[in-house]
Length: 372
Image 1 (cartoon, rainbow, N blue to C red):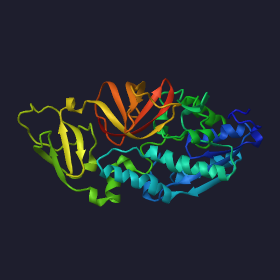
Image 2: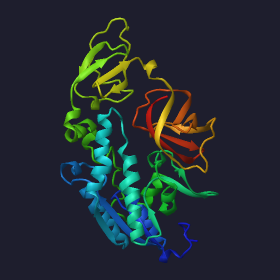
Image 3: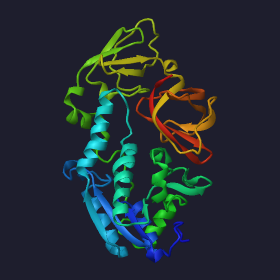
């Protein structure tokens, strides 16, 4: 049994490594090559390499493709660049824009991992007769009684399990995450030891296809009809101001609300409570009105051996990637998955993910749809 848990010598074990050009995936490839595996590097061209790709720190951009090729040459591994731009546009960018138009706050990294990075790359790995697909994600894969399990990374500051909850059990059979047991400084040190040209390269920031974090600007280009003015109203429907497109708002937002003086509210700070896409309305109110005791979660991927019992299962959940785990009860009543929080949560935004944990094991998750 080799270090990837595959019953054959490393030299006869082919591993496709998804190389984004960053330090994490580069170290992954170098580590596996050092261990004697038959490494094949693959980099995906995911979007137009024009203005969007000239931003420092964007993954899968022109410079990143060049960097991945240089790393592959440095470690002596074959390297291929695949044009997945049309797939990425259909499965990630278009869905991202459509979700914003519906008044949601999507996470395109989840869709990207679910589709082009795992679904399509795994298919490619099988075509290449590979025994595994390795990535530089900070998450762990362990073997349990029922097969491979997904677990949080050792480094809580780098843990990416929130973005990988949609990984299926079948995908986990082939996937490997060599960095899950490392901390970021250790990864940097390995990059220096291997003499990789990306050892000092900064981590990618924001969403790779969104320049300068201007999500609304990208959606406006893709769906011009989404940038239509509308009203900002309170919970009773009283008009407090105007906006220039609901795509510029998200649930829980406080800043950027163009409202004038109000009466009867003591000018208490206002937050976005919900977005009414059909009426093009932004509904605002006090922070207390953001509290949610229970939500409905859709498109759930369950990684446990058995679904929660009818009375629910006490688990920990995460509603945002940077949020600490929260206690909750998860249940599936046959029609819907419901999550009831031990204490009310504030700013729960439709379109975001709710991920389920049992200790450090990821039991799955889904997309937040609405309050129950």
